[in-house]
Image (cartoon, rainbow, N blue to C red):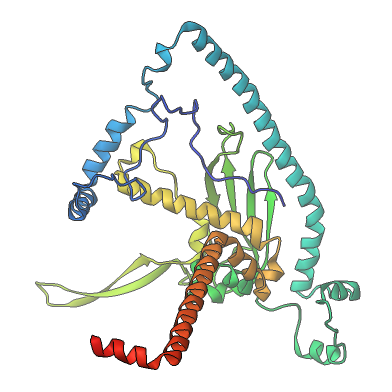
Length: 400
């Protein structure tokens, strides 16, 4: 499968240059480069960081002033001779043609994804029938799925068929719990409902975007047969021709009475000061749940009146929400059986493993081994020398 549609990016009107002020706001964060001035002590830096952390209004004010510098020229380009400025303008025209080709490329990639998704779809449908007991895999499927050197034991197939009712129980729940990103969203309370999940599929929209569809059998928690979540992209492409993620919308879960897994009921006693009577007051408190996935966060707007810290928190939630959707689309659905068995985890760990760290560790091990060998050789030489000249060693010790 081709590269996934990338996450939301800032749509730059023009590329930043070393002579121009960057078009994106300078972040006030831990990623800023520390000044290498010897006179600045560690405690002073910690004190400054603490002051910023305790004064979000100050951070917001600084960012606001920096924001006024966005896109403002430093004056370098204007100081160049007219003929050079004209050449630069010509290069911008060439760059626009390049951007058009990039947008065409991304559109063709999307069409290619849709083409092959149509070929994948019959396989996903067959998988669903096997998982839910409507069909058994063919002998060819079993042979193709058998590991090299492994033999298929057919002797107990009839006995097993009599014991197991149908399909593969809790297939999708197990696959989700093995997924490194999805497992953190599934709580113990959620599992009772997700046991009734019989299929997860996706479909592309006519416009750039995709929809995830979760199908459930009848259960005691909600009346929905399917729960879907749709990811939308902006109409215009980004600076590099990429599709820009805009927002997501999810279905409303029709919870049955007292079965809402996204809230908890808290009871509290209240006493009337005048009558001295007590009463029980109940209130609903939001809790973590996978089903919050269908109520995605909304991007912050200027009308919300939120501060920089709140906006950053919402942006992090939006990024996490999009990542979960991409993982389901690009990893879980295409290779569900590998997530069910846990085999996909080994490839996930390899992706996250830094080969540079491995090289460094090997180099360190080799250096340590060389040092150990050198020390052993030196000790061996000293031992040999001492055995050859015992009197000299004794004399040297006596002189000390």
